[in-house]
Length: 124
Figure 1: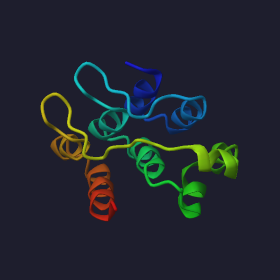
Figure 2 (figure 1 turned 90 degrees about the vertical axis):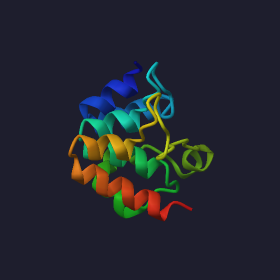
Figure 3 (figure 1 turned 180 degrees about the vertical axis):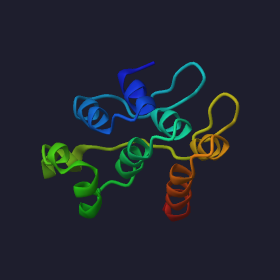
Figure 4 (figure 1 turned 180 degrees about the horizontal axis):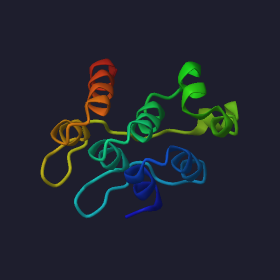
């Protein structure tokens, strides 16, 4: 399990942002096929899931930036943001065929489920 996965599972959104700024791979999977997004969703870590979902919607919306953590995202220069691509797959299936949405719904995490449903329905 990567440090980013551990941070997502525990819901440490600020730590996740620092790890991503340091080059952590947001789409890495463990042996079960779980991504950081699946781990955040399964454990009901709404802010952690939101960080990953918003990264997948680059360029980030300024209204979301301030809500998530302006202090950390302020360290991203416009040039850095242009070079960054994030590979957040909201429909990624783990080894059992479950997605982050399925895991969140199964565990009763309605906030995360709603956020994922919105992201999936607005995905271009």
